[in-house]
Length: 61
Image (cartoon, rainbow, N blue to C red; front, side):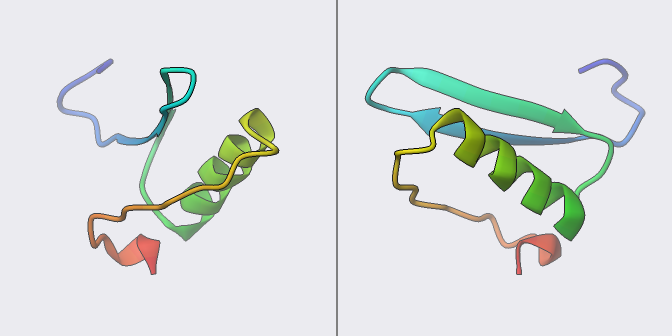
């Protein structure tokens, strides 16, 4: 964390076969940032299938 008082959102994924963790920091959590992260994830693992586990945030809908 850069600043504990500053709002920040982290999106992360585990790539189990290779043992990688793909984490990106965003200034806020919203639908736009969620889509941006999913596009990043697909660009990093273009041939992989994904299982998404959401934590119930409103911008995940």
